[in-house]
Length: 269
Length: 292
Image (tube, rainbow over all chains, first blue to last red; front, side):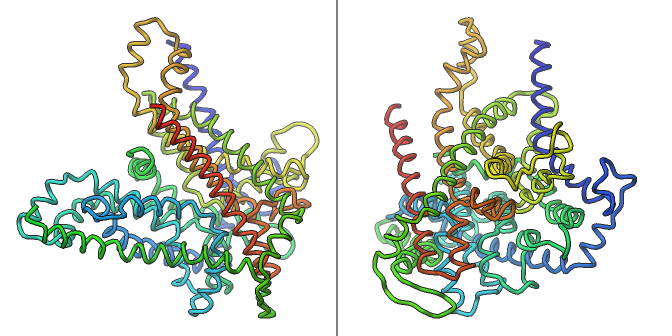
């Protein structure tokens, strides 16, 4: 038994080192004085890199852009997704299974497959290089995710609640708005967190559709982060930490929700 | 409920409720895919505004395009190795997370950190780790410095490592969900029968975990096949195109060369590969369901 405990401890340490080590190295790099990166160890720690990222570059603007796009995508997909997920979970109609499978199939689309037509469509309607326009193609991955996670949440609510509301004279829509939607609040929160994280992290569409530097989102800005002569590793690290810390905090706080949301569609079939 | 009229009304409201979502999905996925197929039949250079129908010319060129076959090979290799390593790491990790021990919550929260980090950030983070002069990896390894991202042969494996770091947690969570569905009684019975832990793993855990494993394989291989972010940031497909995947090649053709005709052909080819892969996995999953 004791040997087994030791084995577990070693495995835990190994996994923790692998998954957290690189992240801590990045945090350390962000605090490393700029001229000393060639040394094996910093002589002291500094917040210089953070200061130059936050005040010397338009990085706060970039963070605001990402917040806007991610919030817009979340609001847009949850509004549409909640109504559809309720119908998928509680109402009888033809094509239910087809719609869920179609959503799953769409979420598996390689984004590169739709990039050229989406580029032309957005350009035609004047939404290319616009943050609002970017939220639209984000529905490709965000809406299927919303549908799957929320449908499984609505299914967990007892059918009796819906039937009782109908007997009391509610239309299906009123039953959704007044009875089931409030009860699905935890599910909505979980879905919102997941969609927000996915939208915050998206890269290919943002890289393709946005061209003005002031409109860049966090991943695009970090991928293009460079100074004239050499890679500014300290600043990149600082920017990475700024861009990641909110997500890490969100994830650690809501880990149970995230795990249940991520595996909801996958196992409850 | 109360009569046929009500059912009819319920159905009507159901269609109204799903309509917006269906329309948006059609607009951002179905229409663009069909449009991409249509574009792929054209010669279409964006900046010149040159656009004419050329039928299957692009596809004929695709079949003889060595760079396409190389990209397909790189993508297949990346997918195969990354997903295999992820699964081999995820199963022990999930077994660990399924066990009660002090610090389990900490471990579960920690493994989600790489998952939550944007792929671009994780690629930048690893690019710094791989830095030939000052990177952590060469600092720790004895011997001469290896140019991880600059040497053919190494670079694609470096990209695989980044993918493994980022997505093993997700696979582990899927496997963990599968593990939690296995009744504890089976293990008790096995212990009573004197089965070793390894025997119990092979005869109980693995067979019952198979559906969850196949599902994880399905999701992950389709996801790995469309890899773009990590490789774009790490190497942009270099050195000498040895890390160029289908998505990277298609992106360069579309956005750097502005060739929307052949670029769309490459996009459609990527899409068809993913569809093919999905069909193979679904068949395997279906056979698994049928066997039970």
